[in-house]
Length: 312
Image (cartoon, rainbow, N blue to C red):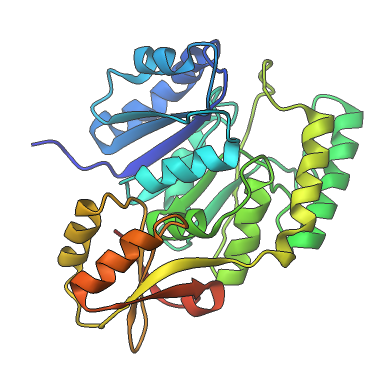
């Protein structure tokens, strides 16, 4: 009988066929330390044109738990990570770039932090700023972080680190409510986490500036700033089914599987249970409500804040 994964590592990949193998080499020691049976690797090919999906199968296909999915076109890092999170099954989720530029040796420390906190984002700072390989980039990065902190109200000095740890249910909820498809995804996740009242414990990480990144600093930074400026204007609501507090959770799981709905979260309150669904799952929500005697409606961040969460 196969062992259930404890950790899900989600790797978004856009035209990363040349860097996946070296990333696997950097990841291998920690795979062996934690144990191959306790880890699942999910690679989300974000509409690549260079054979990334085929390479991902070659590089990670030997693992006991691996999953490879492909977006029909390039949707962006945020969209890829939301898809990966919706499919994750480990109690802990870590997002990691294809090149594993953040040293995977920090994964156990992130998992330890997640014992007490919903989020454990990696932080590359020396306490003040991120020291990049050029003074100009360091100055630009520091200025960008100040803007991000202004709009998201986060106190973190490193919002864009590609390595972030989550407990599974909070990760799913953040993915469900998230709207940003591209690189401002990281900032939006922290913005939503603050609004939902999640505890956040950053973990100091070391990193290597691996060449070949698909990030275009000038253009992508402007796009991120545009998206971040609009966060507070976004109406974060999702379809949800309100059910009795006595509902049988396994019955809900079975119904969701039959309806082919992935990534839902059960949010238990004092007087009811909300099953928060993906944005495009309202029709399935109607069927779920009819089947279980519930009510289909929408749920916002304030209604979900403070509830006990369970990934379905």
